[in-house]
Image (cartoon, rainbow, N blue to C red; front, side, top):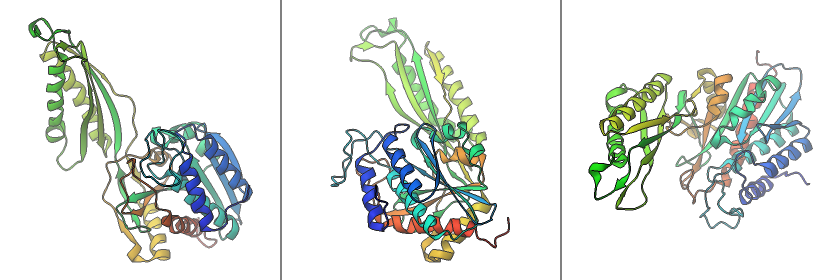
Length: 383
């Protein structure tokens, strides 16, 4: 396999990945390609963390500091509608979040770092599977930071709507926690013409949907941020039949554990009380979700200064905290670090079937990773 050496080669690589997307924990071909490229540039390579994760390690000089850079590799179960000539060839699967671009950016940086070797210390490049479904947890459970310790870890995501190639930073709470709540309201079904002989779970569920809207407005500090969205409501199969049960599926987002726990408590209390008021019963299932992503102040300030130093003030800004979630949060619970953003330009939104990664940002993003490593591992920087 020939190694990519120019930016055009990396654009072609990104489009190759885009045409052959793989879902989380099934990134077999992507993982194999990443490992082969890293080995070709002289990295020590470990595979199989979190099923398909890859870690590449490069050492240079006598420095003792270690920096980690992470990219995600998984695609989404979405049917592509971009019409691009490199569109997904896998039915019902596409790179609708730019993970193909993130992987390519880190590979481009990997090649440059290996060629320049203008640092003193150790670089860990972490290619993570299944970001959309918590693959970071599996990598951590497989001993990621015990086997490959770092002093700080950084991640990057493209961001539609921000001018292409511009960098954005958020200090502190940056991305929200996300929890799924599944509520089943069980009543007593029957004929739609005889409602008095039933316990209608649709009426109870409808009342609960409205009651849930009071949690943010009446149980959460107005200076805090939270979202409760009922995205799915399933029940019944015929207009003249009252079903036995109705299922609600809810997404909950916040930035602090206090608010997260309060919402969890109030949803359960309201669900049980609302159901009981109609003679029904509520079962509440609240599996673990993603924590909020908190960027370390010192590492975020350092990452921001790297961008200003190498790209200029005009290319650097801030974003307000985002209510979307990111499983890099699990890594930042274990290690110091920061998650930053690079503008994707005026593209469709993430997770849209019309979204496409902007290949023009591969070069500046890769240059940024190289600059961050070289500044973090500068030979004259104190440990």
